Image (cartoon, rainbow, N blue to C red; front, side):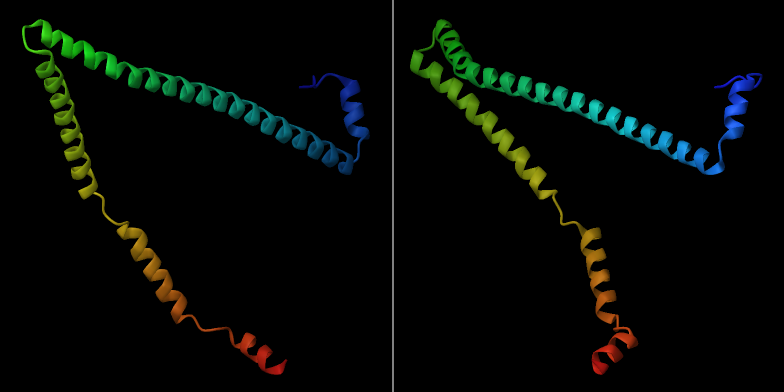
Amino acid sequence: MSDPGNSTANAVGADRSLGQLVASATAEMSALVHDEIALAKAELRQDVRRGAMGGAAISVAGVFALFSLPVLSFAAAYGIHNLGLGLAWSFLIVGGAFLVLAALAALLAVTKFKKVKPPEKSIASAKQTAAVLQSVKPHPRAAQNKVSV
């Protein structure tokens, strides 16, 4: 801010016309808006980079988890075999456990799918809009213009 006691700033401001002041204010406002937009773009770029890095990291984690599943399955089967059960029975127990987990996940999915309902509010709004549009009559001048053409 300028110092009110500063006579040179008051003299310069007094010499400028109202149009010059408005033009200066408009230019400064435009520069401010451009700077704010540039700041928002920079922040969005940074957020997008962070999101992409997070997505890549979660994808890598998923791949490693997927690759570890067979290793852990073999470890569980051989662990059961070390308890004294036959190797074939050990692998059948691990495979059966996976089937039970798959059945539980499928059951959960079916219960969630049954809870999905159509978008009733959107359907009602669309029907109401269609009813209003069907009852609308053209403007009389539009009909006169068609006749006079």
